[in-house]
Figure (tube, helix red, strand yellow):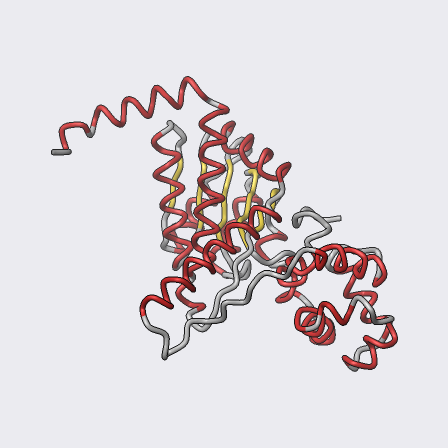
Length: 286
């Protein structure tokens, strides 16, 4: 079993693995996501007839997302459906007024945080905190919206005395990765898990012997293959996907957990550095 959250979060697991599934497996995933109440009453042959996918492919799909087979998937899907399904609020539409947009965005972001809390692995978090707290240097990689999350992580870690470095320039990220060594750590942030620049930097860091960590929403993605420690987020983006709205909120929350975890691991040292940085900037405020 991989560390993509608890096994009983069936629908979350399907969404998380969706991009890495084969086309035939995506057909099965689509049907389950659209008709979960129906699927729990279907045999594997009946689901095969409805999706046009072979029995064997359905079994492989179940195993790929972490279940022993179709029957186990149905058991956990049924347990999940005992609780009322979450209300569907839909995507932001052109005819929405600003009040409706506000409600939808806050609900989407809130759901992203709740879903991420469910799938975020506690042992993975502990391993990441230990790696960052013990590192001589920490590189943080991210581009686009994830690049700003990387910068936020850098600023937080610097304030508690961690030698953290983040550059959004992909070439600089790879340069820095090549200068790492055993005892250092590298954190890659990529919602899709397949951002070439970020993946390449993490691969180089791994080659140098650094402990590698990733934050992504896609298990089995390219960035996961280069990461020793995998931390997963869950966020559903809509027509404004390139805006990385919900995914950014989820990533920032994971960074906050790591930051506090590292600060607690180095409690006295962190407090001392926070006090020093606060004092240094005291006269810059009115």
